Amino acid sequence: MTNKIAIFKGHRIRRLIYNNEWCFSVIDVCEVLTDSSDAGAYWRKLKQRLKDEGSEVVTFCHGLKLKAPDGKMRETDCSNTEGMLRIIQSIPSPKAEPFKRWLAKVGYERVKEIEDPELAMNQITRRKICKTGHLSTGAMIS
Image 1 (tube, rainbow, N blue to C red):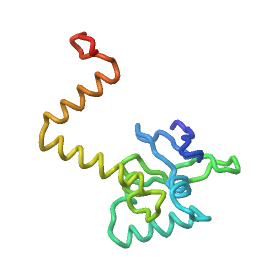
Image 2: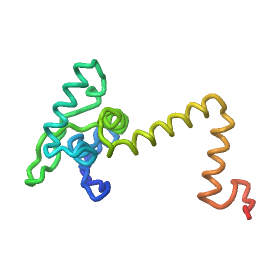
Image 3: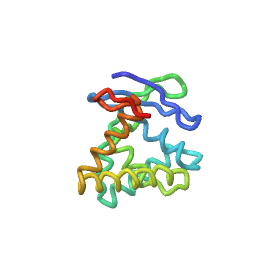
């Protein structure tokens, strides 16, 4: 397992690689996206609410050891990217709204690409041109 710290809007988000994918501290994300004075209590309450509603999002959570502020390794609920995005969707906070809007936009774009695969190909071409300045044929874009 690889431990890393991600910085988001000046806040530290603890993360590590678990089962070959990034997992993030749920409490750290809750702290960033809510005004709760106790992010741990906020997460416990949200997790219970999600369980009561029958949400499967908590199945994406794993108790993993991360370095706590006191320097000790402590078990912390962590989630992979998919689970974290679903958890963020469940947080009723104005700070979470930009993520929710972004997710809705990306989701809408993907649905459109599935309906019309040519849109996906056009998007790939645009990204390649932006990244390299030319198409794979080597022709420069002026």
